Image (cartoon, rainbow, N blue to C red; front, side, top):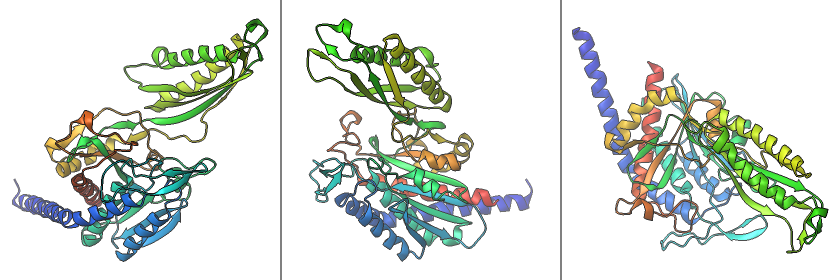
Length: 429
C-alpha cells in the first residue's frame, strides 16, 4: 500500500474514532437535562394545535443556544437553524409536540393532571405516545450539535412539529402545513424517530421502503327508502345494503391485492343508522379507515372502494355517496432505500450491532411522511421498554398506562447526532 494513502487512512480512522468518542461523552453529559426536559413536557402536555407553552419552552431553550429560531410555524411549531458557516448540506431533524386526550393512570411524580378541551369537551391530557421524549431527545441533539459546530459542514434545521396526532375538527395542522409553509425548502435530507414502549431500551429498528402505512379515513352515506319493519318489501333497505357493502369491501384486500407484496387494511369503525327495532331507516352511515404500504396498493383500494360502493348500492336499489379521504390523509412513511443503505453503517455504530433490528412495516401512520415526499428521509424506532418487562406486558401507545424507560432516550440522542455528523461528512467529500 502507498505509504501516504496508508497514513491518510489511519488519520481518518483516528479522527472518526475520536469524533465518536466525543459524541458518546456528550450524550452522557446531556442525559440528565434530557430527562429533565422530558419530565417537564410529560407533566405539562398540550393537545394538537394547542402546544403554546410547549413551544415557548422549546423556543426559549433554542434561543439560549444562539440558534436562529422561528415560532408560529404551522400554528404552534418551532423551527431553529444551526449554521456552521461552512458550505454543505442542510439536515432536518424532526420531533412532534402534541399530547392526547387520555387520562394518565401511572403513579409517577411527574404524571399529568392536565385538563384540556377537545371537540367542545373537557378532557384529560397525557403524552401517551412518547412525543415528550421526542422533543427532549431533539433538544439534546441540538445541544450537542451546537457545541460541535466546528465539526459541521452546512446547516441543521431542528423542526418541532405540532399536531402529529391530527388537527382538531375543522382545523389544519401538522407536517403537511409545515411543508406548505416552506419548512422543507433548501433541505437535503430529513431524519426522525419514534420511541417504542414495546421495544427493549437500546434497540433501534429500521426498514427499507415503507415502514408505516398511508392512512385514508372515509365515509359512506347510503340512502334508501324508509318503511315499517314488518313490510320490508316497501323499503329500499340501507341496512342490508350496508351489510353487503361491509362484507364486499373486505374482499378488496383478500381478493384483489397481491398479498405477498401489498399489505393493506380496510376497516369499518362505525355504523350509524336507525332508532327502533320495527323501522327500516332511510339512511345509514359507515365510517372507516384504509391503511396501505405502497402507492400502487393505495391507488387500487381507492378505485375499488368507489367501484364497490357504486355498484352494490345500485344492485340494492339504493344510492350511496363515498367521501375518500374524509378529513385528513397521510402518505406512506417511506424510508428512501438508497439513503438507508448509505446511513445504515452509522445507525449500526450508534446502536451497536447487537441492538440493530430490521423490522416489518406497521399499519400505524405518521405524518412525517409529508416531509419524506419533499426530500429523502429516514424514520426509525427507538426502544423505550424496560429490559425486565415482557413485550406482551408493556403498556401500549395511546393508553392510560403508557410508560417509557427514560434510559432509552440516550440512544435516540446519539442516533440523531451521529446521522447528522456522518451525513455532513459524506456529503462534503
